[in-house]
Length: 431
Ligand SMILES: C=C(O[C@@H]1C=C(C(=O)O)C=C[C@H]1O)C(=O)O
Image (cartoon, rainbow, N blue to C red):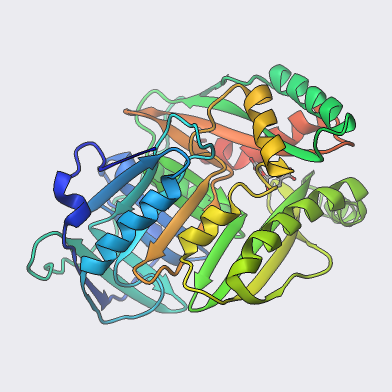
């Protein structure tokens, strides 16, 4: 276990007092258009869906933790920051006031750290109400500098794609081996992933990626935290004033671009016993993990089909009433890794991922999102995403994975993983 202030962070940051001020702000245009140009790529944060959400920049405080206790350490740090904060919040909605953004590695033994960031400026919007939050370590209430719409981002130049640590052929082999293990009765489901490296001839502006993802994938949460950027359709958990919700996805079919054919495919997905079985594992893992924290829970009996431009998923929205003071991060930690990104049973799946995947997933497939001082917040699963190479804004590694069950076919899973790479591949394009 380790738990350190981020390199470059004030050593005193664990005990620092932050001064926070939120005021109403008329926001014109999209939240993402306020992200300033020329800010280091890993200092822009975002959690945006259909125009609502929060974006931020600068860093008032940061925190890193790693190992099996990464969630607990992050939570303890955040509670100590929140307990000392001086907050003047004239807006008082979820997302105003003191907020941190976070992103956590998938695996307990990842070489990467969990990252919590408290930006120095946040612009937010929720159901027609918009605001500005300023956060500083200065004991004076921060001066309010009205943010302005920034210069438009330039597209990335000359992007080339290369196999990552797991090539499509390696991936097909790993899937075949996983099916053998499942048929031998070792486990029911395992999610295997592969990677693809995108390199441009100059820095890739995350604002370009975020804007394109938001324009095209309205059914997703468009995120950016410490150099991890993506548009996830899967909400691990949201806690919002006592209400807990989760959107579980598992079971996927590629879209063809022909609407009529896609509708027929959607109907076949909703009847596919392989996909329904895979989905059921994922829903059960979420419902079981949330149950101890909830007084009542609604789990629909059958999934709906979520339409995205590249794929369609079987989806279930779980809703529950919170019965204790577990924060959204505690809930996210208890749900991670759900069967949507790990497998069933969890321990056997995690072991098989380590054996067959041969890569550190980093923060791909880990929780990503935000939390306020009361513990309300939203955490997605970092899918349909890419991670900037440390210290190199011209390179991003993209990831995609698929749930493997007894009926899985290696070539179809390679194709499905390619379809899941499309949002980030397209976001990196210049046209
Ligand atoms: C693992 C990913 O997606 C997950 C796997 C799915 C599946 O196998 O059907 C569907 C949605 C996600 O829960 C990914 O996009 O990388």
